[in-house]
Figure: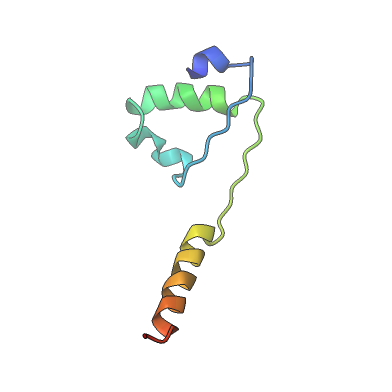
Length: 71
């Protein structure tokens, strides 16, 4: 799939793993290196290290339920 899209169209990928750990997901270090080479050629990398929005909302929901009076 990535080879077909290479230099023909946009690809958006999100991950909670740093590039160094991608070898554990794909078929070995060589395959991962080839994939990253193509993905990072002419790309924009945005690294976000903030708190998860979903986690924050989940914790807020649990706190609201805990303080809500029972009927």
